[in-house]
Image (cartoon, rainbow, N blue to C red; front, side, top):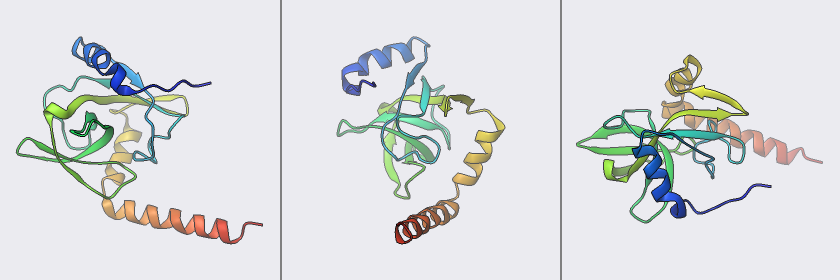
Length: 153
């Protein structure tokens, strides 16, 4: 049985751990980082960023509306980041360093720990950063679901 809690209740603790040089493991909720991260199966390890974020970093940040988000950096211009979930096409602009709580340094998929420095992860990022490939993937997934529904007995 899994227990859920509000991240806002632990915000100070998470920030303290990261500011102290520690790492914090969390289990993301939602579908925005599919296909990389699956809710209730996968987890990420956060650390304090070493300076400004770089393109393709996965950042854990707090929006001005109080919502916690785990998305990938698409670009950085004039100190503002453009972010997007791997399962999304909509870009979020104007995220600043003040919003960022931590950055992913590794993740666990199906119980297997993977560093963001691994060759397999770098290949995933190289392919997935293309919005063309995302669109093709999303269309194929929709087609698969239509076929599945149509031929379901």
